Image (cartoon, rainbow, N blue to C red; front, side, top):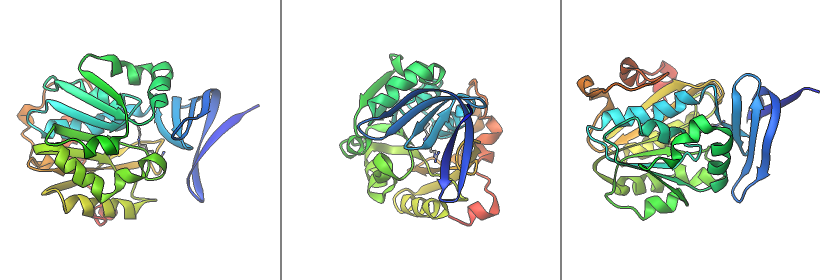
Length: 274
Ligand code: AG3
Protein backbone atom coordinates (compact mmCIF):
# COMPACT_ATOMS: atom_id res chain seq x y z
CA UNK A 1 0.00 0.00 0.00
CA UNK A 2 1.23 3.51 -0.77
CA UNK A 3 0.96 6.07 2.00
CA UNK A 4 1.05 9.79 1.22
CA UNK A 5 1.07 12.80 3.54
CA UNK A 6 -0.48 16.05 2.37
CA UNK A 7 -0.07 19.41 4.03
CA UNK A 8 -2.98 21.58 3.02
CA UNK A 9 -1.05 24.82 2.64
CA UNK A 10 -4.23 26.73 1.82
CA UNK A 11 -7.86 25.63 1.64
CA UNK A 12 -7.32 24.74 -2.00
CA UNK A 13 -3.67 23.86 -2.41
CA UNK A 14 -1.20 21.45 -0.83
CA UNK A 15 2.10 19.60 -0.94
CA UNK A 16 2.33 15.80 -0.91
CA UNK A 17 5.09 13.44 0.19
CA UNK A 18 5.27 9.67 -0.08
CA UNK A 19 5.78 8.17 3.37
CA UNK A 20 8.11 5.23 4.07
CA UNK A 21 7.17 4.94 7.72
CA UNK A 22 5.63 6.72 10.67
CA UNK A 23 7.75 6.92 13.81
CA UNK A 24 5.51 9.05 16.00
CA UNK A 25 1.99 10.36 15.81
CA UNK A 26 0.99 11.99 19.06
CA UNK A 27 -1.12 14.74 20.54
CA UNK A 28 1.23 16.61 22.89
CA UNK A 29 0.10 19.10 25.50
CA UNK A 30 0.37 21.82 22.83
CA UNK A 31 -0.05 20.40 19.36
CA UNK A 32 -0.32 17.37 17.09
CA UNK A 33 3.18 15.99 16.48
CA UNK A 34 4.10 13.61 13.67
CA UNK A 35 7.55 12.30 12.85
CA UNK A 36 7.71 10.39 9.57
CA UNK A 37 10.23 9.14 7.06
CA UNK A 38 9.60 10.41 3.53
CA UNK A 39 11.00 8.99 0.28
CA UNK A 40 12.20 12.33 -1.04
CA UNK A 41 13.24 14.48 1.93
CA UNK A 42 14.25 11.97 4.62
CA UNK A 43 12.83 12.25 8.12
CA UNK A 44 10.28 15.01 8.53
CA UNK A 45 8.80 16.76 11.58
CA UNK A 46 5.17 17.84 11.21
CA UNK A 47 3.33 19.99 13.78
CA UNK A 48 -0.43 20.50 13.53
CA UNK A 49 -0.27 19.15 9.98
CA UNK A 50 2.43 21.64 8.89
CA UNK A 51 5.91 20.64 7.72
CA UNK A 52 8.46 22.05 10.15
CA UNK A 53 11.69 20.56 8.93
CA UNK A 54 13.12 17.74 6.84
CA UNK A 55 16.56 16.17 6.80
CA UNK A 56 17.12 17.15 3.16
CA UNK A 57 16.26 20.87 3.14
CA UNK A 58 16.58 21.93 6.81
CA UNK A 59 19.95 23.55 6.23
CA UNK A 60 18.47 26.42 4.23
CA UNK A 61 16.15 27.68 6.95
CA UNK A 62 18.52 27.08 9.85
CA UNK A 63 21.53 28.71 8.22
CA UNK A 64 19.58 31.71 7.02
CA UNK A 65 17.88 32.34 10.37
CA UNK A 66 21.17 32.18 12.25
CA UNK A 67 23.96 33.57 10.07
CA UNK A 68 22.30 36.67 8.63
CA UNK A 69 21.76 38.40 12.01
CA UNK A 70 24.93 36.93 13.58
CA UNK A 71 27.11 38.35 10.81
CA UNK A 72 25.29 41.68 11.08
CA UNK A 73 26.09 42.07 14.78
CA UNK A 74 29.81 42.81 15.31
CA UNK A 75 30.20 40.79 18.50
CA UNK A 76 27.24 38.59 19.47
CA UNK A 77 27.88 36.84 22.77
CA UNK A 78 24.37 36.22 24.21
CA UNK A 79 21.85 34.63 21.84
CA UNK A 80 18.24 33.57 22.41
CA UNK A 81 16.25 31.22 20.19
CA UNK A 82 12.49 31.24 20.76
CA UNK A 83 10.92 27.98 19.56
CA UNK A 84 13.19 25.91 17.37
CA UNK A 85 13.05 22.81 19.56
CA UNK A 86 14.48 20.70 16.73
CA UNK A 87 17.82 22.39 17.47
CA UNK A 88 18.71 23.37 13.90
CA UNK A 89 19.11 27.09 14.59
CA UNK A 90 21.19 26.35 17.71
CA UNK A 91 23.54 24.15 15.68
CA UNK A 92 24.22 27.06 13.32
CA UNK A 93 24.52 29.64 16.13
CA UNK A 94 27.33 27.60 17.70
CA UNK A 95 29.40 27.98 14.52
CA UNK A 96 30.05 31.56 15.68
CA UNK A 97 32.93 31.52 18.19
CA UNK A 98 31.93 34.87 19.73
CA UNK A 99 28.73 33.30 21.08
CA UNK A 100 29.31 32.43 24.72
CA UNK A 101 25.83 31.27 25.49
CA UNK A 102 22.85 30.25 23.35
CA UNK A 103 19.54 29.89 25.18
CA UNK A 104 16.71 27.87 23.62
CA UNK A 105 13.20 28.41 24.94
CA UNK A 106 10.84 25.84 23.46
CA UNK A 107 7.30 25.44 24.76
CA UNK A 108 6.91 21.77 23.81
CA UNK A 109 9.42 19.35 25.35
CA UNK A 110 8.20 16.60 23.04
CA UNK A 111 9.58 18.45 20.01
CA UNK A 112 13.03 18.37 21.62
CA UNK A 113 12.73 14.74 22.68
CA UNK A 114 11.65 13.37 19.29
CA UNK A 115 14.04 15.59 17.35
CA UNK A 116 16.97 14.19 19.35
CA UNK A 117 15.75 10.70 18.53
CA UNK A 118 14.82 11.02 14.85
CA UNK A 119 16.68 14.13 13.64
CA UNK A 120 20.06 13.65 15.35
CA UNK A 121 22.09 15.65 12.82
CA UNK A 122 19.76 18.62 13.44
CA UNK A 123 19.33 18.33 17.21
CA UNK A 124 22.82 17.03 17.99
CA UNK A 125 24.17 20.27 19.49
CA UNK A 126 21.38 20.72 22.03
CA UNK A 127 23.59 19.07 24.66
CA UNK A 128 26.55 21.35 23.91
CA UNK A 129 27.80 23.09 27.09
CA UNK A 130 27.36 26.53 25.46
CA UNK A 131 23.62 25.80 25.18
CA UNK A 132 20.92 26.20 27.81
CA UNK A 133 17.62 24.52 26.98
CA UNK A 134 14.47 25.72 28.73
CA UNK A 135 11.11 24.07 28.19
CA UNK A 136 9.02 27.15 28.69
CA UNK A 137 6.72 29.69 27.06
CA UNK A 138 8.84 31.93 24.82
CA UNK A 139 6.36 34.78 25.10
CA UNK A 140 6.71 34.80 28.89
CA UNK A 141 10.48 34.43 28.71
CA UNK A 142 10.67 37.51 26.50
CA UNK A 143 8.26 39.44 28.71
CA UNK A 144 10.50 38.86 31.73
CA UNK A 145 13.90 39.55 30.09
CA UNK A 146 15.49 42.98 29.97
CA UNK A 147 18.62 44.28 28.25
CA UNK A 148 19.95 40.74 28.07
CA UNK A 149 20.52 39.48 24.53
CA UNK A 150 22.60 40.60 21.56
CA UNK A 151 20.59 38.58 19.06
CA UNK A 152 17.14 36.98 19.31
CA UNK A 153 15.87 34.51 16.73
CA UNK A 154 12.20 33.59 16.56
CA UNK A 155 11.92 30.11 15.07
CA UNK A 156 8.20 29.64 15.49
CA UNK A 157 5.45 27.69 13.82
CA UNK A 158 2.75 29.59 11.95
CA UNK A 159 0.48 32.18 13.56
CA UNK A 160 -2.05 29.53 14.58
CA UNK A 161 -2.01 27.44 17.77
CA UNK A 162 0.75 27.96 20.35
CA UNK A 163 2.69 30.47 18.19
CA UNK A 164 -0.15 32.91 17.42
CA UNK A 165 1.02 35.42 20.02
CA UNK A 166 4.54 35.41 18.58
CA UNK A 167 3.26 37.42 15.61
CA UNK A 168 1.73 40.25 17.64
CA UNK A 169 3.14 43.73 18.00
CA UNK A 170 3.34 43.37 21.79
CA UNK A 171 5.74 40.48 21.32
CA UNK A 172 8.08 42.60 19.20
CA UNK A 173 7.97 45.31 21.87
CA UNK A 174 9.00 42.67 24.40
CA UNK A 175 11.82 41.58 22.12
CA UNK A 176 13.05 45.14 21.90
CA UNK A 177 13.19 45.35 25.69
CA UNK A 178 14.87 41.96 26.02
CA UNK A 179 17.61 43.06 23.59
CA UNK A 180 20.64 45.13 24.54
CA UNK A 181 20.86 48.68 23.19
CA UNK A 182 22.51 47.51 19.95
CA UNK A 183 20.54 44.27 19.67
CA UNK A 184 19.03 42.69 16.59
CA UNK A 185 16.30 40.11 16.04
CA UNK A 186 14.98 37.97 13.25
CA UNK A 187 11.68 36.14 12.86
CA UNK A 188 10.45 33.73 10.22
CA UNK A 189 7.55 35.51 8.51
CA UNK A 190 5.96 33.02 6.14
CA UNK A 191 5.58 33.36 2.38
CA UNK A 192 4.47 36.08 -0.04
CA UNK A 193 2.20 33.88 -2.19
CA UNK A 194 -0.35 32.75 0.39
CA UNK A 195 0.21 35.11 3.34
CA UNK A 196 1.16 38.52 1.87
CA UNK A 197 -0.86 40.42 4.50
CA UNK A 198 1.09 38.79 7.31
CA UNK A 199 4.40 39.95 5.82
CA UNK A 200 3.08 43.52 5.46
CA UNK A 201 1.64 43.56 8.97
CA UNK A 202 4.76 42.22 10.68
CA UNK A 203 7.01 44.58 8.73
CA UNK A 204 4.86 47.56 9.71
CA UNK A 205 4.74 46.53 13.38
CA UNK A 206 8.49 45.91 13.55
CA UNK A 207 9.34 49.18 11.79
CA UNK A 208 7.29 51.09 14.37
CA UNK A 209 9.56 49.70 17.08
CA UNK A 210 12.99 49.23 15.46
CA UNK A 211 14.88 51.96 13.56
CA UNK A 212 16.15 49.42 11.02
CA UNK A 213 13.73 46.88 9.53
CA UNK A 214 14.62 44.57 6.65
CA UNK A 215 13.07 41.62 4.80
CA UNK A 216 15.00 38.78 3.16
CA UNK A 217 14.14 35.50 1.50
CA UNK A 218 15.37 31.94 0.99
CA UNK A 219 14.25 28.97 -1.06
CA UNK A 220 12.76 26.19 1.06
CA UNK A 221 11.10 23.53 -1.10
CA UNK A 222 8.96 21.89 1.60
CA UNK A 223 7.41 25.14 2.91
CA UNK A 224 4.35 26.76 1.33
CA UNK A 225 5.30 28.23 -2.08
CA UNK A 226 8.98 27.48 -1.49
CA UNK A 227 9.75 31.19 -1.17
CA UNK A 228 10.23 31.96 2.51
CA UNK A 229 10.67 35.33 4.21
CA UNK A 230 12.47 36.52 7.33
CA UNK A 231 12.04 39.90 8.98
CA UNK A 232 14.89 41.62 10.82
CA UNK A 233 14.47 44.37 13.40
CA UNK A 234 17.70 46.05 14.47
CA UNK A 235 18.48 48.86 16.89
CA UNK A 236 21.79 49.90 15.40
CA UNK A 237 23.37 47.64 12.79
CA UNK A 238 22.06 47.59 9.23
CA UNK A 239 22.36 44.16 7.58
CA UNK A 240 22.88 45.94 4.26
CA UNK A 241 25.97 47.71 5.56
CA UNK A 242 27.94 44.82 6.96
CA UNK A 243 31.70 44.98 6.76
CA UNK A 244 32.58 41.81 4.86
CA UNK A 245 36.03 41.60 6.41
CA UNK A 246 34.31 40.40 9.55
CA UNK A 247 32.98 37.22 7.93
CA UNK A 248 34.92 34.35 9.42
CA UNK A 249 35.17 30.99 7.75
CA UNK A 250 32.15 28.90 8.41
CA UNK A 251 30.92 25.64 7.01
CA UNK A 252 27.58 26.09 5.23
CA UNK A 253 25.51 24.63 2.41
CA UNK A 254 23.26 27.61 1.59
CA UNK A 255 24.65 30.78 3.17
CA UNK A 256 27.50 32.50 1.31
CA UNK A 257 29.20 35.87 1.71
CA UNK A 258 27.38 37.08 -1.38
CA UNK A 259 24.00 35.82 -0.15
CA UNK A 260 24.40 37.74 3.11
CA UNK A 261 23.55 40.79 1.01
CA UNK A 262 21.81 39.25 -1.98
CA UNK A 263 19.08 37.65 0.16
CA UNK A 264 17.76 41.18 0.74
CA UNK A 265 17.26 41.79 -3.00
CA UNK A 266 13.52 41.24 -3.32
CA UNK A 267 11.36 40.29 -6.29
CA UNK A 268 9.11 43.25 -7.18
CA UNK A 269 5.88 41.73 -5.83
CA UNK A 270 7.58 40.93 -2.53
CA UNK A 271 9.17 44.36 -2.16
CA UNK A 272 5.76 45.88 -2.83
CA UNK A 273 4.47 44.29 0.38
CA UNK A 274 6.66 46.41 2.64
N1 AG3 B 1 9.52 26.84 11.68
C1 AG3 B 1 8.76 27.47 10.62
C2 AG3 B 1 8.01 26.50 9.79
C3 AG3 B 1 6.88 27.07 9.06
C4 AG3 B 1 6.41 26.12 8.03
N2 AG3 B 1 5.07 26.34 7.64
C5 AG3 B 1 4.30 25.40 7.04
N3 AG3 B 1 4.80 24.26 6.73
N4 AG3 B 1 3.07 25.70 6.74
C6 AG3 B 1 10.38 25.79 11.30
C7 AG3 B 1 11.08 25.13 12.44
C8 AG3 B 1 12.40 24.64 12.01
N5 AG3 B 1 13.36 24.73 13.04
